[in-house]
Image (cartoon, rainbow, N blue to C red; front, side, top):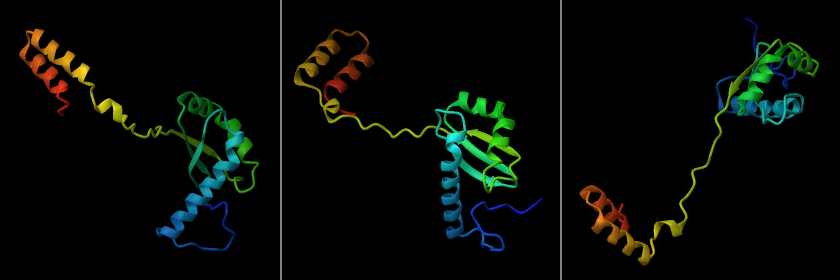
Length: 146
């Protein structure tokens, strides 16, 4: 199998692989490649280049419909992207689903503290409930204990 082609590296230069500098450079180059190919791929999707080696471009997207469209029309996009400088040896695009990163939501401070009126309503409800476990749960909720 041929050696990986680095689109942004000048011919004849050799880079030591496996070190942080090399990996950082690769990520930077893939980010630049992402910016170049983004407008040429199906929209509206935020495509991200993950790797480009041996004529295979691996990209990710968050929308399964857009991924399916790109996979289905792969030969069209390979022909279009192969015209770009540095992608002349492109022969295949692999598309993967990228999970959306959702920041955990912080509960609002007001949701942690129950008003005294709400606490009293919960205590009253606990008195009328015949199920002892439910009654205890309502009392714990009224007292704001975890």
